Structures are given as structure tokens and as C-alpha cells.
Image (cartoon, rainbow, N blue to C red; front, top):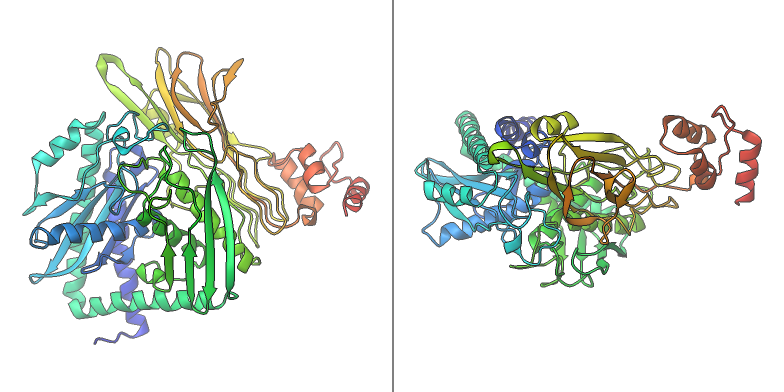
Length: 578
């Protein structure tokens, strides 16, 4: 067995991560649709030859994809085995959300990498394609009751044989999309990313040899497992329970509980989701693989020093009831998986807050607000704008939450307004921070945002929304307050309408002068709001994060007309509240 010194191991870790990072960059620069090119809704990595376990991930790829793609590679390994095993020059493609996927828009390309005729590892690319059919342009159908209403489902199939793309496969994909040209560009970007990754890995193997690189990959996996055990051992042994809720499934207006029992015993952790809602009628179901993947994301947030590979999960066991909202199988709809995984992450955070309150963070805004707007340009050309939106992150033991950030499932960026307006016939009427949306606390939750979108002259369109946190706002911790809930409306300035399902809306007709308006949640607060210094509260008011009324109500801080602290009135307010 090859034993590596620490310096060599560190160098190889950086070199391996650079391969995945270059693959990320290649796809981002060549993709056609803004969700990949601008938002970076993508991921690449290297995976174990036999098990599919994550070996290396890119530093800019979506963490949720990293966790799920290990299951995707395993699915391809099993598909290969039925056809005589993997072959050089082949690449597999699929988007099956129940077999290592997430939802139908996320297409996975998986390729075996051979070295001197022997399989060395797998490399994989994931990217969010703009439209893959279904009832709703963009795929986020808030009223879907099975996966057939969300788009075309592709099982693991060979896309390339001997380095040549199978035209029959691409023809099927093109026929099932409203924007086939966009998907074609994204597909070629993913193929190019895999080509580059294979080339870079071959060069590294030429330089160091197969045994050395294999030893490095094994050492990095074992190190991640060892560090995770140490992190778990530092927590108090015990059983911690938490629950949170999804507003509804878009079909039945009933809350859906996500329940978690976290058991810490020495160096091991058990995550048991027994008691969570049964599989629902609407599109908020997720598969077992996706549930485990979002637990991986939550744990990486809690233990950031642990290397990002499959070793993170070695000390952890999972109980995910089959048939539950977290253990769905075909054809349960899964298009809104992003909302459910965010709630799973929140429940992990909430359990952790009981075992280690001094390290806990309050809940982030907890919804991507998947918005699709679609219509026709002149000459019969279809356009589909899909976008997700930001909100506030939770306060934490050290600082306030970030204003207008992205959710913890991803390192994606919110597409810039200028890019969206350049690509589609829309106009943003407002893009601003939302005052009083962050939960009050010693460390205040970050502010959510306000987005208002209309259409250009002479254009009509349809809008669809799949969001959450309209009825169950992001929670505070350690005495911090809840954030403001999500709010969606549409219509004219003097005639606004809110959907009965709060953050889910289907087939909204938009015409001249009409807009859709999102007011996204902030993050929860951390710690007693009355422990926040009056000067910090006054600054929040000056910056527009908090109103003077909320300063008095939530923080017991009174301000003078010039915005400075009224010391006497504040002392009276804070004394009266004790």
C-alpha cells in the first residue's frame, strides 16, 4: 500500500479538486441557459470505480448535486453491469429522479475513465436544463400529481459509444422540449466538461502514477470519515428531536410535517425521519437518495472542516421510511424537490441546536421560489424564463445573517436582472431588500428581497410559481425571533391577488401593466433581541433593514427623530420588558 506524506497529499488534493473546478468552469462558460451559465446550477466530480462513492467534488458545484450524484453513478454502474460492464469511449445520460436523481430538469452525464484497459474511476456532470416537457414550461408544475406531468423521464442509457453521440437519444430529448436548442447547447457543454476532466485526470495519472493517485483518493476519504467521527464525538450523547412543516403540496391545502430524531452515541450519528408525512399528491416528494444528499449538505454546513467526499457519511446511518414524502418512488411527482430538501436541512439544523446551541444557526429563508414565465415572440418562437430567487440567511453565534443570499443547498448565484432582461422580454420593476423581514435577535436574521416583474410592450405570458415558507416562517434559535413569511401576489398596482395556496400558483395570465411580485422571507434571528446593542439597532434602521416601529416592538429600542438612540426611552422599554 502506498503511503503519502502530508505535503504530497495536500498537493494532490488541490490538483484533484482543480480538475472538478475546471469542469465546472467549462460548463458554466459554454452552457446556453442562464440557470447554468449565470446561476451555476451544475456540479462535477470524480467517483469510486466500484461503489460510485464521491471521491472529489468541485468547490463551486452545487453541494446537493454532489451528494445525489454518488447515487447516480451507482445507478449507472448497475445499468452497465446488465450490459456486460463499462466500456471505453462511452458516456451515459439520465434524469430519473428516483434512481440517483433529484428532479427531471437535472440531467446527469456519467463516464467511466479507463487506465491501461482497467477502470480507474467515474467522472460525472450535472446541469439543470431549462425545459424538458411536461405541463408547465420550465418543469416546476405546482399542480403535478405524477411525474408524467413534469416532463420526460430518461432512465440510464448510453448517450455515447466509442466517443460518438447517439443521434436517436438526442432526437428524443429534442422532441420533448420547448427549447431544444438551449438543451442542445447545455448537453454539448457537459460533454466538453467531461472531455476536459478526462484529459486532466490522464495528465495527473501520467505524472504521479495510478497507485499514488489511488492512495491519495483513499487517504482523503478516510480522513473525512475520521474527522467526522471526531466532530460527532465532541457533541453530547443524546437523542434530539425536531419537526418543521411544508405549507402544502399544491394540491391539498394541508401542512406536511418533516420529523427528525437525531441520536448521538460516541462517534456515530443516526438520523431517523420516521413520522414524516406520507408521500403527498403534489410535487414535493423526494427520493431516499435525495434525502441523504441534503443531510450531507446540512452536515457540511455544521462541520465545514471535514473534507467534501463520501467519507463524511461513513459514521452516519439513515432511516427514511419507504413511501413517505422523503422516500418516494415512481411515479410520485418530485418537481418541487428543492422546497422539501430545504425543510430537511432546517430540521437537521434544529436538532443540532439542541445538542450544541452555542454553534447553532437560525433557519435560512427556506424556499427557492421557482418562477416560470413563458410566452411567444414574433414568428412563433417560444420563450421560457425560469429563475430562482434569494432571501435572508439565519443569524448565527458570531454574526447577523446575510442579506439577500442563496439557500444552503447550493453555491449557485442568483441570475442578475440585466441578464434576465437581455435574454427574455421581461422588465424588473423592483429588485430591493425587504425591510423587517429578518428575524429579530442578538444577531439579526438577514433581510429577504422584493422582486416585481412585468412584461415588455406588446407581450403576454403565463406565470407559474412553486415556493414555500408562506405559512411556516423561518425559525429563530436561542431566543431569536422568526423571520417574515414568503408572500406572492400578481395583477395591477391597484388590483393585487394572492393565490389560495400562498406560495404556489398555476397558469397566471399576464398582460400589459400586470406584474408578479415576490416578497421573500428573511432568516431567523439568533439570541435575545433585547441583548442587541441599541446602536446596532439604530444602524439597522438607518440602513433600511428594520423600521423604527419594529425597532421599538422587537428590540425595545426607541429612536429620536434624527435616528439616534433615545437612551432614556430605550432604558424604560427594556426595563419594562424584564
